[in-house]
Length: 494
Image (tube, rainbow, N blue to C red; front, side, top):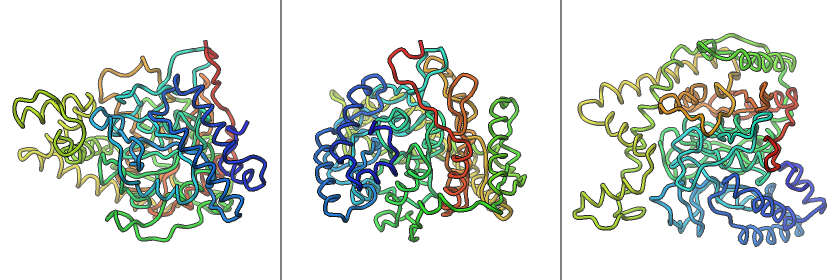
């Protein structure tokens, strides 16, 4: 089936004329039609636009001078502004927003010939770890536990992108990662998720959650495909002051690089009390695979890791509070009706427009930024963040890449969501430190657990050294030979 091809395979097939871009796109829009009502991976499907773009791609391919992604059907997280296509951030407050401009990341993908299938679902404003907070409904993970039909979460916030790629209703998808929102859903859905170094991909035209943390990245079924997508997405953007003015390397070439002599660090602090024996065994399996590939295994310490989660949940809500202040019913978003005054308009609009999790984070962020608590919480968190980053800098003096678990568990059931929001935040325990330090990091699927669900391992690299990350990821992927895929037949797990 055409939907089973990787991006690399499809690109080669298109150039050999084995099939057309129109056929490839139609296969994916047809699969979306069959599966999306159940999975809810897409908020908006743009089949007509996709088919028109595929026709143009076929002309470019026939002319013989087509970029790598020409004719490749992708899903776009509904946090990236897309010109003329509704962009909601999965929130009621932006439910009818149609941007008159294109984000830099999606513009780069279009320039590279990609075909956009539609806008994928997410946690509202990217705030969540399970894709349960979207105003447009929850996303279903295409995986099931063996012999159990319970609906599982796909992880968050990029759960729609992860589910779409895992279910083969997109060849790849964009995600954004603030505290793990690419890597954790990638682990839950058995795919590859790559968060580049902060500043590697432009944030211009991407709806902001926490501006010092947000970073776009690719979600794909293979490391090579992630390298291909990142090559197109990355690059300096003068419209984004945080965008790094650095050349973009040949990431795809890194997938065949030898790992002989590469030093892999194993952080002691990523073995918290109560960690499952099964996850420890998978981590050890990854260590052994990299050792067999020629790597040197080195024990390292990141002593401030234990403060990462608490620090993140001060800084991220503070930035969220500032960024979402613009949605007031006057300048941006929908406006509540029947307000008696300007203050009443603000209150009603924000109450009706934002969901519970977003309101919670705005309140927390406003609190830690307030005059009486700024020094006690926000300023202290920024100092701890500096120490976390210093830990990584020190570790990378001894090693080239770090290997850790991606998430503390496999995907959990939708009806198993913890009532305590702090328990939900613990899903990010392994991913947040790299985000706080701005390091590049990637999740690679390596095994199935005892209940038939995918488990991923996380690689963390030096700033702007995605090449080494990709090289190590490709070796891990090859050694693990993870080829399992979810059974998408209705009721298959019952």
